[in-house]
Image 1 (spheres, rainbow, N blue to C red):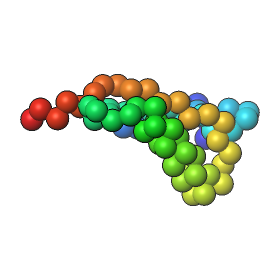
Image 2: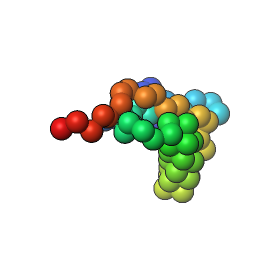
Image 3: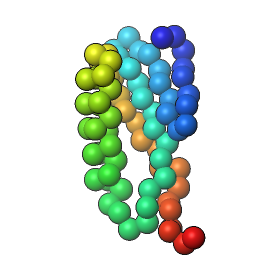
Image 4: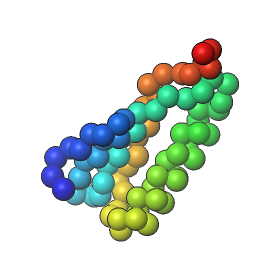
Length: 71
């Protein structure tokens, strides 16, 4: 893989130290963002490493917005 790959809020970059993953997410109002982001990082790391065998350098999570659930 060379360069960046962007798909539905997921950006992947190949680095010398491993794969750099950028996730853009919307979180539900009232949740503990820090816990959700930490769990998301752990789950993504485990899934990608198990599925691809590629080392993960970093996983960045960007909160794009908050879902207020007012539909």
